Length: 303
Image (cartoon, rainbow, N blue to C red; front, side):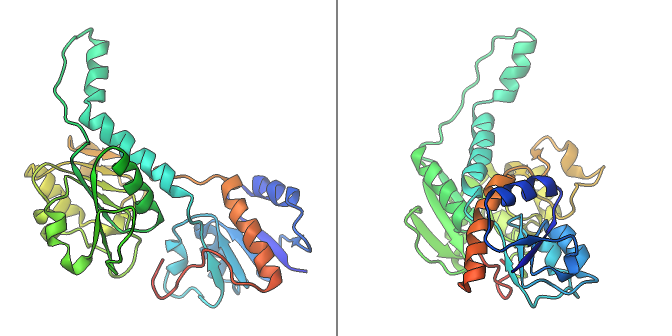
């Protein structure tokens, strides 16, 4: 009978959901070091792994598992993370901010408070070009929404493999022509050795003037100083940033008060326990049957 331990900030909720699922043979335990399965927030699991042997299977409650990649922590276990939940939420974030910016909604709200009637010209998304860095599940959903608005959608990925949601996809090494067309650039890149600092001065210089930049992947992808320089020069019209190298974003960081930066506190896509448990329950049945787990983290790739 497999034993399961909870290491989350919502243990009571997760426990109730799993009890209601009537998982065959499971026993719940508070002795984390002896459990076969951990359902865990990555940071809490990382603290436990620092002084306990790993379980056979660790089910992360998040998509990002950076805390578990800390040097010195064990990796001799099966790790799954949340997949295929965040595309709709990320799309809502990107297009909510994009439409608000293009239609001057914050400015119009300020005018309303002052009883000021002042129309402003705006542009449409139709006919513009959106480029995503990364072409996985999240990027494909963003691409689908972009196409519904009549946008041209281009992707950049490690493999350059064609995706039906995109008008074209290229490899990172061949991205110059694609980047030069990006009126909107959306990074959904994971945190890997290859992606850290990828959006540097040379990449930013390849973007057309007045590009709008979104980062909803990982903060490590952006060279923050290079981005600040591009913003100050007016080359990047606005940056919408939900993730940062250091979180929370430190007080006094230039992003907080920059007029061309929108800062949000890593909230673009927040999973709910009910959604997490749907994937965990499916994988539990696979685990006890000896079948491959879904959404396994690929240690060598880093995502």
